[in-house]
Image 1 (cartoon, rainbow, N blue to C red):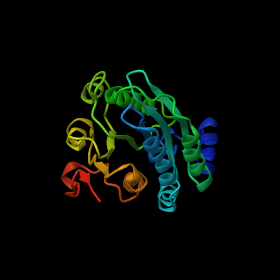
Image 2 (image 1 turned 180 degrees about the vertical axis):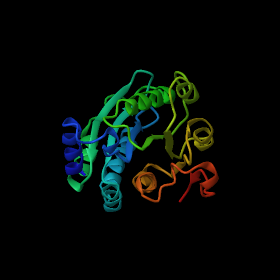
Image 3 (image 1 turned 60 degrees about the vertical axis):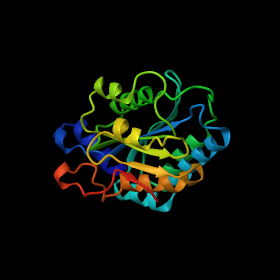
Image 4 (image 1 turned 90 degrees about the vertical axis):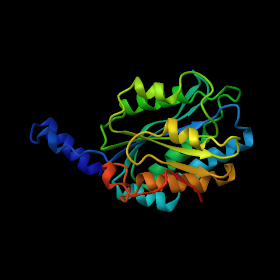
Length: 241
């Protein structure tokens, strides 16, 4: 993949290839992790470790390699202005690059712990990040994780209304434990795009397994994210173990 991109770039620079010949990346994926006050230090560690271990899962690595690599970006979010980049855009296409990206996100210390849940602001930031991706990929997915509903700033739907959401899918990983369950809120207010879905972790201890399932569904060649509605399988939007 890297050699192909290099050869295409040279061809374009010399005027030997039409613009249409440039290889288009398959997926740009934004990982957005909730670090609001509802998440204690133990849960934060389980979330960070779970994310890194899910990315390093051999099946996930194989799925990424099968796609020829993907663009990956990560940030943590909390209040209206508490947005912290954990991974700048990086193209991952091998075990070394994937694990390196996972460890970089994992090594970032928690920046804040006492701010509310500004989910709308986080999703707005994710859209901005996608618009700044190094390539215009065929699929664009925001993968947002959280354990509660928006309680600060504008709601998710306002973020979507203010942005160009064409071609963007928003999926969610919801960690259960709060009452009432936040799942209906995420299904009604957060999901966006064809075949968007909620993956459910029963607790933070289940986070790694839930994130692994979610990444495989998003990255896998069998993904139906881009299918037209009439062709989508009749799967439930929330997937429970």
